Image (cartoon, rainbow, N blue to C red; front, side, top):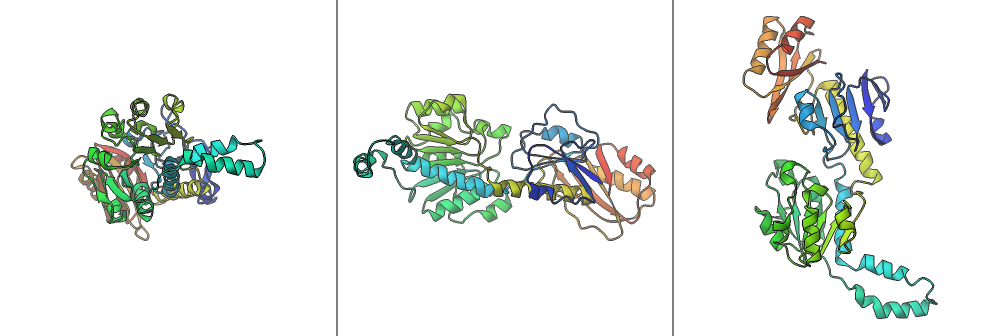
Length: 390
């Protein structure tokens, strides 16, 4: 039986993927093999020695000590793309709110409560509606920073609205490039995208290299009537610099999902309470994807959508036993492990090896289950981090 400890409220559609005959799942589980969570912070918490994997039902993993876990052989998963449609729709709503006089118009209409009969209100609305004149998205230029699952979907909807779309992503993957509509113009320099865009929307992860990616220098490149949208992470934007640009009328509007004290008092900020992925569908999708990732890893040692280990897949050889091991990515480790197996006359029937930065991961199917002495010998190979027998 595998044990899954949960934090936060996880969708039942995800939890249902764990069959009762193979899994014990709950928030009171001791000595877990895996953790399934959303926003609960694991930094500083003791790490159970039994822990093999952590799955985040969402894209961001800044609540998990990813590098520390990687050094302990703990695979960290996320669910890229599972909430992409929810975020895409909120970005579209943000652009519409920034373009038309929707919010001030609603507030004005509500202020007319108790003003008399319908004819009087209609006459007043006809007189005052010019205060809420907006513009159209058609023929405007949208700059997308980050062309992953969400960015490519935002590009699709913007093109459908007859917008011009520019894209910037210095780490564009092959898979992301295939998803990207051909009409998107790829820009190789961020400042060029900022200079040419009427709207700029951010879709990059919160990592050290993206911290304050949008700062005073970048904001100075933008059009004075431009709109900045941030439904990715708060740290990507220097909020103080944004406030200064708004106050100086060097930026028309900031639409974000991250209310911050220095921004809340500014009338040129439209802030939602971190609801980018808050749809029933997105929560279901994230939970299901996270559950399937954990099952594939725990039952077969396979890795997909990990943020600290490489993608590794190999079909099980019928009748075989699977050995998995994680190691530091240095020369000779795999050869030394194979020498251990050969010395013990353990026949290898299939294997694969992949690496990612400083870590590597291996799947080896053998004809017969190795003895404890063989397993112990693999553990003792220099640079091996963790060994499992499945």
